[in-house]
Length: 116
Image (cartoon, one colour):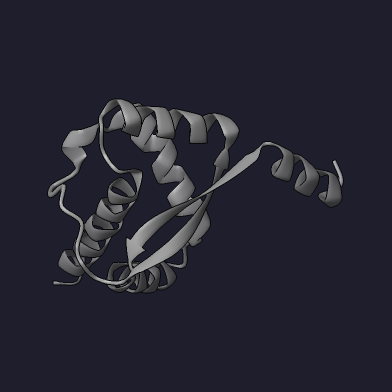
């Protein structure tokens, strides 16, 4: 399959959605991801897929959103993953943005503890 065909198939089978994340958390998260040499978009899409199959609302430590300024973060996933994620957070009656923000906070904490 040619590279152009792969890109076309990716676009056809991909859904985009935006979550609202604290700017402070996002900047720290982006820094940690760069330090590890990972791709932000792949990491977030993998988390969304894993949340659907392996986690539930108990993943959220604190259901209250911070009052900090928010940043829109675009996440690319398959159509099926997007629908499954939206359905799951809706059934659990939680905010999808809060779920992703909690993942970012956990990621930051993990790497901060790893340094010590």
